[in-house]
Image 1 (cartoon, rainbow, N blue to C red):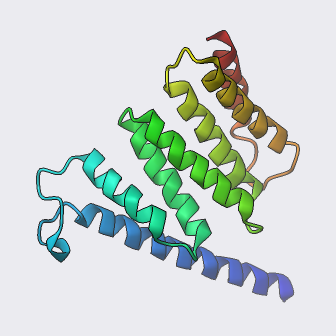
Image 2: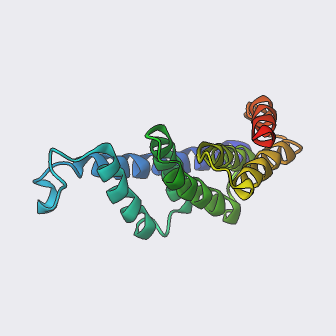
Length: 171
């Protein structure tokens, strides 16, 4: 009975988190509407314009919901990375990792996810600066080290982390 109660509580928290993420993303997309609170960016807004506005909002919003904020940092970071804005992606993945490390509720898989994507964003910086490659390698090693702790979702990042460490050290 106690286990069922714990699972129910976790499900309620996840539902609440999903709702807040959905609300934030809907507001982010609505930013291109010129009628949105009379200050939208307009129909000519680019994806980067919308992401920049969302990024600014995220820095001040959701202070009392670090798990939601960490998820949104991951989403925005992934989008920046897909648009070739690795430097902005690094910022969001690092923020996600920091929030997840500070949270006692964060699971091991979430920590590995943040480390993995942060390392990948460092690789995308295409820098000849060895400290950038060292950072990528350090975070991939963090993923591997975290795999010594069991996770319910398995170790999907393990083969990729090893592969990327090899790429980082060859640069």
